[in-house]
Amino acid sequence: MDWFPLWNSLRIAAISTVVIFFLGIWAAYGIAKLPKLVKGVLDVLLTLPLVLPPTVVGYLLLRLLGPKRPIGVLIMNLFGTRLVMTWWSAIFATVVVAFPLMYRTARGAFESFDETLAYAGQTLGLSNRYVFWRIRMPACRQGIMAGTVLAFARALGEYGATSMIAGYTPGRTATISTTVYQLWRTDNDAMAFRWVLVNIAISAVVLLAVNFLERNNKKASRRLGRGAAA
Amino acid sequence: MSLYVDIRKSYGAFRLDVTFGTDGDVLGLLGASGCGKSVTLKCIAGIERPDEGRIVLNGRTLFDSEKRINVKPQERRVGYLFQQYALFPNMTVQGNIAAGARRLAKADRQTAVDDMLEKMQIADLRNKYPAQLSGGQQQRTALARILINEPEVLLLDEPFSALDSHLRDRMEREVMAVVRDFGGDTLLVSHSRDEVFRMADRIAVYNSGRIDALDEKHSLFKSPGTYSAALLTGCKNFSRAAGLRHENGRTLFTAEDWDMELSVPGTQTGDMVGLRRHYASLADGPGENACEMEITGVMEDPFEYTLFLRRPGHDCEPLGWTIPHDDFVGLDGKTVYLRLPEDAIMLLRR
Image 1: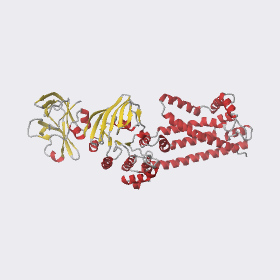
Image 2: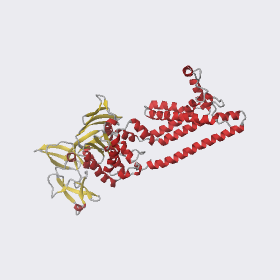
Image 3: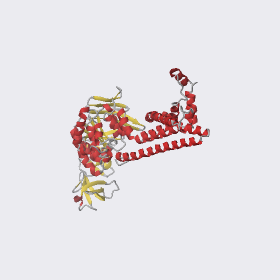
Image 4: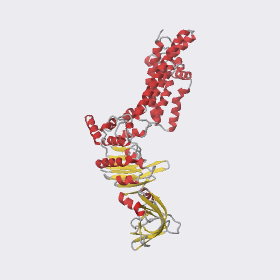
């Protein structure tokens, strides 16, 4: 059995999760402070990929990054490479599709943050960066971790947009989800079933990880006394 | 040491417009909730930005709308004690205090934190998290975190509102000790007149975004000047004052709601009259500021009675008169002669 699709899926999901982590936090934090109207518009735009069919996302990405489009041409001239049909092309797809999960959960966490903690930090002379990373982030970490895990799981299972922008080339761009489809399509039922089992195993591990994190979190919250009488 | 504040800020229909200063003393900001006391503190700390005005601390301009100066909260050196203390939940007691010590040179921090833990008597709690602390311990930690930061002014925002009543008394004395020890400009925001009276040197009475009265506490309680200041300082008997006239260096008028003719020394003005419930006495018979009253009701408190009295046969507003339990004996159900002492009668502007 060629394990390439597993390795490829994992690295795509891992890289997109890192990108989404920072992008999602940045967007969630930045947008919470904007005026209402701008906030509303940006919110719709950033959440749209959550409800659009992945094929529509794939189509839009091809319109944007395709080899004949300005960006595609520019990158080809500068770096001599296409943006589509490589293993890392799938990262564009997974980032766009999984981003809203991180963005929305992180924003929810930021919005429930008690702003007086930040004020207290500022009056004590702590830099805004310190306040953000050492006070705001730890207080919001439950939501941020949940968003990260959800984004990773979603990126791992992405099929529609990935197949459109990275295609299916065995040993080069194949992921677990595209491999299952190809194997089933070519009547290789036994192999398809194996990959299905692999996929189920990974998802189970991810869910176990989530449960484990949540349990630890509950312990931590008890220690931190969220919701306890002040 | 001095703090000067002259700011204006609008929130929709609400408008804050206050001017005051301190001179190394404790100034109490007394007012009902939502009258702008906390916003004032936030403007001084730099958390909120006034629309216009000026804030100067020890000669350093923190805010000046004309000169476009707005110093960051980090550089204002303001010790802000928040209502719920705002301890960082992810840090221990020691961590919270150390977070306030980051201005100090790295080598000195640990010693300073240890000293402060000792001073505030929370050394044995150093590794506990805020949620594991009682209200009083949280307050001590918050104070330690502020003091180690060496602030130039203390801002105390309803410091005892988060505490159970039995703890309040003790923490009030502890905080007083800290404030005396600090010795600099201190603002105390509270809606409790007793708390403000005990802790402050001077009191500013807030009334919907404005300062109604600002005075040394004893003179403020003696002559609040305005109806709202009298109300906030706990005066409960009020009447309209009519027919005001000055004769022989005295001021005479009719307290319409009590149906009494009253006379006070000096030439005073006002359209309302107030009398605190503790200030009245029995008289032998009718006389100046004294007349016959019937007792229409009695309210018993743990250590005092409050009698409600009015002119016999008149359907007017009863006066409340609070006396110790012992003095009540023999008064129940009687008609008495009541004197309102002339220096306790407060003429007020509405």
